[in-house]
Length: 427
Image 1 (cartoon, rainbow, N blue to C red):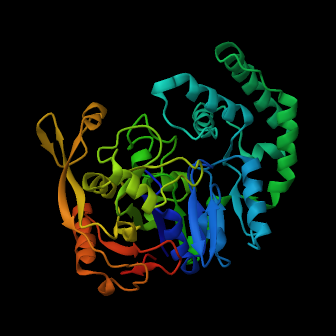
Image 2 (cartoon, rainbow, N blue to C red; image 1 turned 60 degrees about the horizontal axis):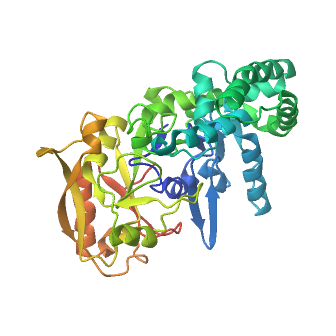
């Protein structure tokens, strides 16, 4: 049976939570495979709105087993705060599984993230300051602390003390900050151990057995393709691989298990943080999109940068992820526009480029080449089939589909669970 991967096809914030929630009653496992609490997914069920940061969106579906896999970095305090918030609202969180191999965000990671970003000044990356990057850096340099380490006090103590020998030197001598106390950190994390223990398992084994038994597994990435550490707008990227290839390493399943890759694509484009953004609007239209689309970060609350749809980015996402289906979100936000500009290529120093340029320098200097498509004025939030959409809205969708290079299989026409047009099954 299939493992289905869900990826953001732009710079994140495309509406991945809505897509996961749509298929929640048709899959058995929903798996977060990378990132940490630097991401935010909003899910609207009836009149209830849920903002998820670390937990898989599938935790809101009672028949789904939600999984935080080995590729995720976990801040235990955030984890338990989020679990407590859901439990207070009557959500059953007992099925949550957490990989013993997932790495832990430590207090020194958060502190270093904040001070180093401030130190960069105008050259800042635009991180959330949650300690994500420093945690992944320690993971790669083989100095990380994993979930399983909390169950062995000797290992935990050794790792924390070794880490602070280095981190406190940096905090005190480079950034003129106070050093952190090893004992306090060790005590806190030993306290987390017993609370997290009932959820911890070998998630790779669980997921592969589930697939062998014919279960459906949904692999949910956070952030987006253009924030991938390898394939994004480096260095203005996240510290992990939210692309489809990252799902295999981050969840511990083989690439032959994945049968479908669903790309989430907003009907326009947004970005949070620093870095190039060719179609970004600095005028009243940018503010109009922000207001109409409620474009504020779920995790940070920051204003999202807004711009028109960028076809070269969509094609790029199709290529590097092997996208088989798109879920187009927030089509309703564009209602009321007489004409809708769509970026079909870039002008770079007088030369036309139909694809994302090879170098960062060229991408920074890319000027969008626009084509205008007809808009619509009818309210589409109550539409429940593609045929009910205004003809110009249908044409807009079909044009984006052709430009992106993969079929649009679902369309979001509002934030609610029932405000989705499913043209083809996403499972």
